[in-house]
Length: 422
Image (cartoon, rainbow, N blue to C red; front, top):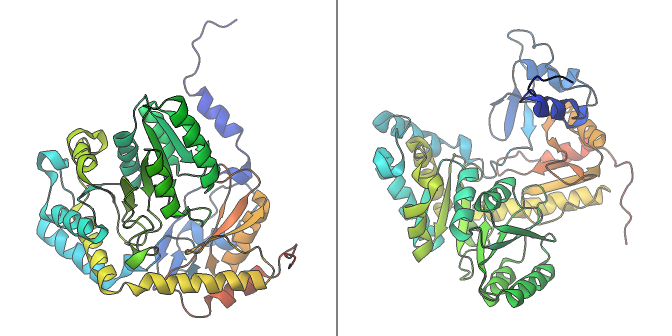
């Protein structure tokens, strides 16, 4: 028996060795190439046509120098309103760089707060009808801060079983007890709240859900959810990352105006076309975050150019509130088109249209088929989604060219097992 100490990295190596090739991820590189389009660059240009979907995810040979690769219709990103390439956002970020530089250089409570931070927080608070907004460098970080504000180790936190990983990490960090309720099943949640409140009347209860689930495309009944939490004296954290700019009145999210929503989490990296995130709250929650939140206190402030771009996006949303409505109408037409072609109707109403196909290999093969036809949609596999529910995640954008649905249906072809009509 060897007396040598164990290799501290052995568990990592074992996990990698056990990872099936169809679950192995790799980074790819794309260059924006006009409205609603991307271009694979470098080695990834060759990967689009050279790498079989079921082979190991090794890096293929680079494309010939100077080669011009075809455009890919972007059906993968979360740039729902096409703001990331909008001239007003580019101009705002460029002007901010010229005036203030790139980074803030310190945390908000030291010397990192800039006028653009305060202006964005003020304008967002007014837009959302909240007393306070605080900015964060990332959505993951904002969600850690949000859970830490509402829960502690004595709390019971009830979460939708499909909430984002960042929220689960936040619950773990607090030491709170975790219960999961069935996805968007408010009856299941009601029963759990009733049992919890009856068993321990004074216990701190927290409920966490999302207004638009990023891999499912579905939404809860936010009004009923808020009322349920109010009735059982439970704090409600609603993650609006994928809904803001698209869902709710004027794109303000499904929690807009609901008194039972104690804390809203949102990001600027999706419909806002920028980067960073925020939390929106009233009264004591907002003040607590500023005074006690570690993720807020101990992080360098959001880069001012990103804040400037987010502020420009907010101004566009205020000026053109119909962008989100038009996108939802388009999403309805796409759902109808997919269903008419025999594919399972993607659930939900928003711009995320998951096409459930079941197996990893099937999803990867469909991804490659679309990419060969000039359309980019990524195969989503476990553990991001439950076992047996691999899917293509189709994402609509405001700036997709007319005829994009017809291109998609032509590339997909008929499903192997068409849906039966009732």
